[in-house]
Structure formats: C-alpha cells, structure tokens
Image (cartoon, rainbow over all chains, first blue to last red; front, side):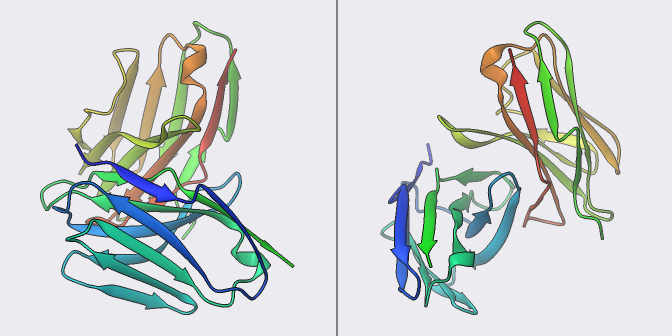
Length: 113
Length: 111
C-alpha cells in the first residue's frame, strides 16, 4: 500500500531563506508526483508536476526534484517570502490506468517578515 | 472560468441528519473527484467519476455515503445519517485526464 510522508510537519523561517521540503513514498511504481499549495480555508493549487520519467521541474522560485528509486521528492523554495506561507502537500499518482492520487499530510510553512 | 464551485461552503448539522454537498466542475472537464480532509487522516480520495460514471469508490467510508453525477455539470455527495466523525472539509476537484483543479471545499460540522 502506497504511503506518502512529509517532513517536517511544520517549518518557520525568516524571509529570504532558501528552504527544502521533503516528501517520501513507499512504492516507487508511480505515474507522476505533484506538489500543491493550500492556503487556510481554501482549496489546493497545483505548483509543479513531475512525470515519473523526469528528474525535476522548475517554476519561478520553485524547483521540485524526483528520485523514484529512493522514493523521494524535494521542493526547493528560493528566497522565501511571507506570501509563501501556506501548507505544502505532495501527492503521487499510481501507475497509468487510475487517477487516484495519494496525498502526504503536508508541511505547514511560515515565512517571517 | 469560475473554477470548481462547491456549495454550501459551511454546513453545521446535528447527528442523524441527512447532508448533501454539491459540486459544479469546470466546463469541459471529464473527471470529477470527491476528497475528504481531516487533521488525523489528511486528504483522502472518496470517489471519482469519468464521463459521469463512477470509476473508483473504494475510498467511500461506508454505506452512509453516496455520490452521484447525473450530468457533466453537477455532482452530489450525500451522507445519511450523518455522525460527528464525518466532520471534515470535503473537496471536489475536476480535471481533464489527470491534474485536478480543486474547489474551495465545504466545511462540515456534525454535532
């Protein structure tokens, strides 16, 4: 059974710091991995999607990497800003044929001004 | 595009009552997902539809839960009878072949 774990559960950093959020999964047979952002009282917004054949994806100050063999992904946020404060969730999609995503429990990030 | 629309945004009900949550997916999307989020269990997929047909309902917790999609622009998730442990945020999401777009959620409180 696929399990997705995110460490740390919460993180507080001063503005301007570069930071790394971690995601690990137990079954390497995935179709893709996606990072989401969730703001309080709101739904999830997709940040980056990495296909199983890819190693990384970048969007602005965000970079996500994927190491399928070790069951790990990292989300790197450069030059963090208070507006980055949110909960970040990773999710893995099982192999082709199903659209079932398994979500991690998230990392709650607070960037202090 | 208005995005995924969910109603109501907040629902407070008493144990034993019937609860119906509603979702309007993004026009043109052929997949619709219902998720539940709690502090203890995180975000869990309850059921998803493709072209209005239920594909995987293995996440539906028990017979008290039912979901329907009578047409491409509307879906409901019904809980009957409701219990305090059903208190959670319920999200609807829609997509075209994969990447889900989430609605704002319905916060359900069962007292």
